Image (cartoon, rainbow, N blue to C red; front, side):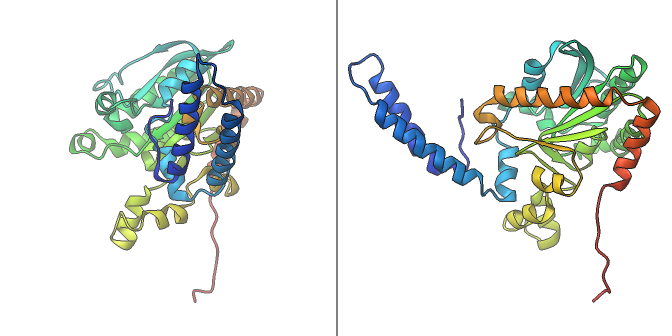
Length: 323
């Protein structure tokens, strides 16, 4: 159930409340409002299509961060069977901002690694709002090395504002942990499919994002910096310039697919994944199965070489005469 509405969704609230009121009022009574409810639902559908067909980069950023948006734990529970969570990096400790373990995708055993933001205020604080410490990335790398040893594919789910920038994280080697993950994932001798399910921020996202296939949900974002951070650097105002920055960063799934950064955009139900989490999970599951089927047919040496070339080729630039 949707509990929170974004500013641009406010026109929908009145119609949804009116429909719900009529349904409750007529339940168990001899009154029938079927025609009125049908007309209101058609009007609601038209309005929702109109709103969601013209979203700006900042509005999509708000959807990616939506508090009701399904988190990695939901997709793990819904898509996979027999998930066994594994803890710790075998060096320092366990980081709850990264969850991972062994699971079954139908008849296929996989290793799943994901950012976990939390579903309520208490869990968000406990999981540091999905911002991992170095031990989180080292746990992720430990699990991916295990996948390589046992020749099991890796599935990662990205949903983080970025790596935690605190003093303790820096003292324990945050930059080194991210860099090591980038290097080792580039060489990992097993298929990797990564999915941006919400917010993909900076190196904190990329640290579990080097894959043979990179997918994004329709209203997820993926960027080197947040719109607020970009605006603060360029225009010295993180609030007033965030909408302009979000459009300039080209951080939406449609933009990144067009630019060749991702391999597939998975469409979400109208209104976003929080409107129908189960349908979103079903669509994601089908996409994962298709890509894993394709990747497992590729010889491992070719797979690693293609992965290397894929990331070397990402990006585009224009040459000018300097004027």
